[in-house]
Amino acid sequence: MPPGSLTVVGTGYRVAGHVTLEARAHMEQADKLLYLVGDPVSETWIRDLNGTAESLEDCYAKGKPREVSYREMVERVLGYVRQGLDVTAAFYGHPGIFADPTHTAIRLARKQGYRAVLLPGISAEDCLFADLDLDPADRGWQSYEATDFLNRRPRFDPRCGLVLWQIGVIGEGSIAQTANREGLRELVRALLRHYSRDHRVVVYEASSYPVCDPVVERLPLRRLSEEDVSVMATLYVPPQRRRRPRSRA
Amino acid sequence: MDRALMSFLVELATSPRALAAFMTDRETYLDGTGLSDEAKRAVMSGDRNTIAALAGGGRAMFTSSRPTYMAARPMYKKKAAKKKAAKKKAAKKK
Image 1 (cartoon, each protein chain N blue to C red):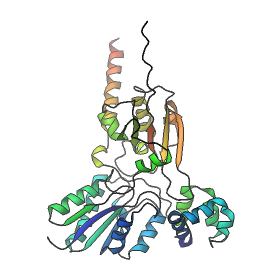
Image 2: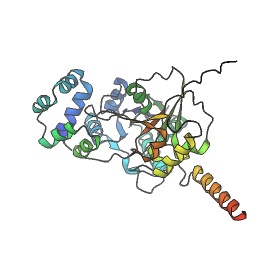
Image 3: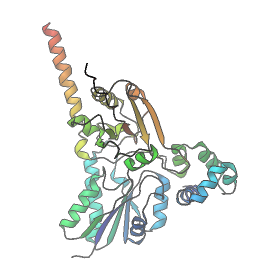
Image 4: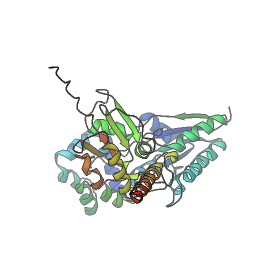
């Protein structure tokens, strides 16, 4: 096995608090630490952990397709691995969920003979279950990326909970700072085929800082497209109530 | 970057005792932190973007998603356009 390795870790959503002991040790002890996080406090904290820390954020640019940004990230990460360094790449949330470059980097590193591991982290969905006090095992749950949900229209069971990720960036091919209202309207139209207009849904956003509450907006489905939805928001659609069996006369 | 603010937030995120003390009496706790008045106001606001802006970034930019889902013109838009065209055609025929 050639010298050099890749460990991909997640930083969760809450600054410093969501990083596992294992992930933190990899971040501290890496020969090279690369990172992609959404808030400046986490960024400074990461830079303090390891002097080699380097952001991958400059791979993004407004109007630049994400695929191009992701390819650049993968290349930069693997470039350091090929130099024989033990590299840690830290991404916010869970590094294996809705994070294409992490999976690609791991696959390519292994293909090229390097040791490569992806460690689990805390995802937006994990935070959602905790903050909404939900046990998804109760009636089961389904989880989709919102644009994918609209594009593929998968068969799903409205009697189970439904989690739709990234409802603020539906159809967004680059980076976004404001929600796409047209996409939200399309999402509402699609959901109205399965739920009543008054079905209560929850717009959710995990809290990044311990002094901020999570965003938990409960509203009827019909009002969703009028809502000021953040680009970080996730939608939770609770299960439909079970219909009472018709009594036989 | 307001480093005092960063240290304060990291402490609260990693020390349940500190967080409990803050939650019990926010103003008294903040007085003992050495945070600037501006930082104290941001903390008291409980607003993520205000804190992020003061912390040195303010970019609450969402960036992570699978590119395969992210065609510039997603399928759902094409479907909607097709539906609209079919409706128009039907209306013309009438």
